Image (cartoon, rainbow, N blue to C red; front, side, top):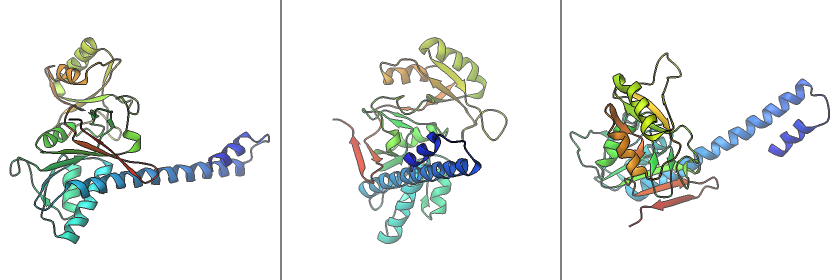
Length: 270
């Protein structure tokens, strides 16, 4: 279809309305097929992670994002078919609604302070299983839930798999800050670590994005980073920073759904 569309675009003739319409329809079909492929890859990764890491009587941290929808779908299916008894702790309002909608048992860290496993998505994963999370602004609660789990599992599609951070994710590191401190934090970030720090603005309302915790989000696009653990510590030491979207040394295993339907796995090195 792509070749066909290119032929139309390169044709040595005056375009008519029908030519433009045909080209648009071809690109629309191609985009639709690609998005279906991405969704199937998310589903494959999520299903495999749930099958490999969830057992009866488990307490489970439920992450946020589009891939987690499939993880909860598979978890609910296993609960119905196998009679599993599990409790779920959400990382966001979205996760909470997913748990309730799918008829799973809802809990929280006050009632369930230690989790057997937490399953979450990521915006990008490097070869050392260092993550960037927070594209949806939930990184603080996601990190708290992940740290409460004995085993933290990441599920994603092939677009999130990178050799080093920044190859696939250009929006930078999301950093949740107290509203009163956003300007000073942004200034100190740029002065201390370089790069560019910008307050994330909402798309469907006037003003900044507000997290589930009532915080603002700064997206920091770095210029050069040698050690992500050190960088994460430096950022967290800035007064006003609540949490970063850098997950360093936390992930046990990542599952990546591929375009061909297979699932690749990357596990923490001993």
